[in-house]
Image (cartoon, rainbow, N blue to C red; front, side, top):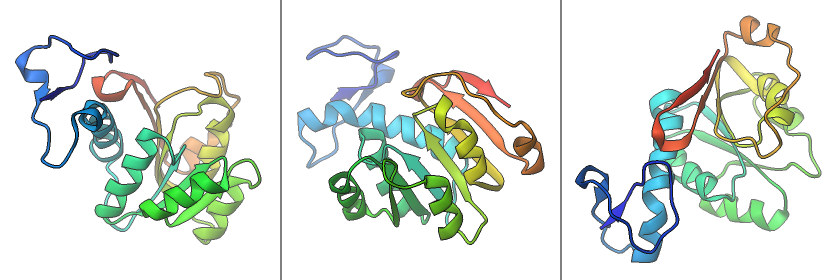
Length: 189
């Protein structure tokens, strides 16, 4: 079995309540299974349960080659979304493309807002999963379609942002935040 630890954790062995234990899927190694519940539950809860990504919509995940990003690409493609990713090298972008990403953007050499605008005919994407935070906040709002949903999952770039709140009202945007699988809603605008 593997377990979904409340609050996360790093250990070879843990004691958890029965409700946190999951069977390891056939064909998945014990080592790989250790990361599966955290990633799967985080992606499922943020993208599908809270952001309600559905077939035919467009989805941007920052950090496409990360654990969260790689799982998000695969499950969003499986569910019928058009997937956009950002990553910082051509090797990482090629990896994302192999997983099914439709549009791969090197954030070091390309403006992701301009590329999203171009690729969507000016509409923007429907859902964004962001682990960067502050520096990307306004750029994410600029990249969203009308009724778009931005989900904040981390603050690798910092937690503070200067933002034009008019974008949220004018486009009827939803901004949410969550600490992974815990379901702790920390921000909802």
